[in-house]
Amino acid sequence: MEEFVRSFFEVDTNISAWALPDIRITDIIDILVIAFIIYELLIWFRKTRAWILLKGIFFLFAFAGVSIVLQLNMTQWIFKATINVGVIAVIIIFQPELRRALEQIGRGSFLSSVFNVESHTLSEENVEALVYAMEQMSSVKTGALIVIEQEVALGEYEQTGIPIDAAISSQLIMNIFEHNTPLHDGAMIIREDRILSATCYLPLSENQEISKELGTRHRAALGLSEISDSKIFVVSEETGHISMAYSGQLYRHIDGDFIRRELLGEKRSKVNKLKARLMRRKGGDGS
Image 1 (tube, rainbow, N blue to C red):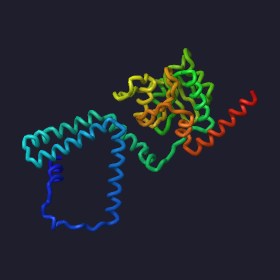
Image 2 (cartoon, rainbow, N blue to C red):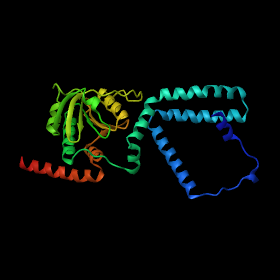
Image 3 (spheres, helix red, strand yellow):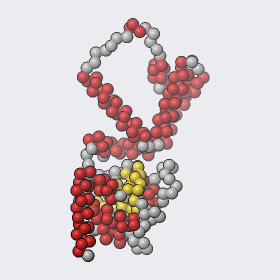
Image 4 (cartoon, rainbow, N blue to C red):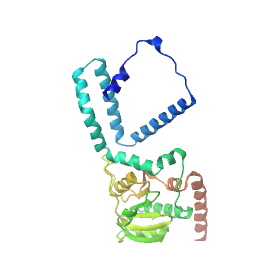
């Protein structure tokens, strides 16, 4: 590290010796690949606590450069003595973020985000049932926690709840989360158009930056989203607002259109929204 910083700040005064190297196509590809990797890393850093770490590294890098230029021997010695310990400390402190990054690479979500590959596990009819149920529960402030499983299996959390194994319907979802019913507490897990289980326990997020106004449901949703690719929807019992947790981020005050886009994609959500309006109009005319 010290040698790298030193070489970075060394200036070659022999300008006439500089020569423009031959640039090949492979060099351009190499530069583009490295630039893309750096860009994706910066985006990842920005979404996690590691952004603070990155700013600290930049500061230390600049400070080390100044100490080399000014030949501050004592400062250089301290920097060299602490750099090895610092690397180990960073790995320990940011272990959850590093684990999440490796899991994303392992399940291919990185390439999916690059090439915009969508993974849909729910039919349009069941998405509409979910949207209707969440909107109805939101209007009467009924708390709910609904997990839509994606590629990462949630078997260990499914086993903590009560097996349901039923087809998705808006009425069943609302009945499960109704106040003072045996199944209303905990999370509902949905996989491939089936309600697998209810009253499931989810891991709580340890992120200290979460707003204090958010309750246990929101923390549980964020906690699961940090270690899986599931999309978790929360209906607040206090405000009635609907939120979604995904990839460690919480999207608050969302509506039915947002849910459709997330579960169906942009084009299919518009078509399904129109179908839902027509069906509701027909139902209203017949009543």
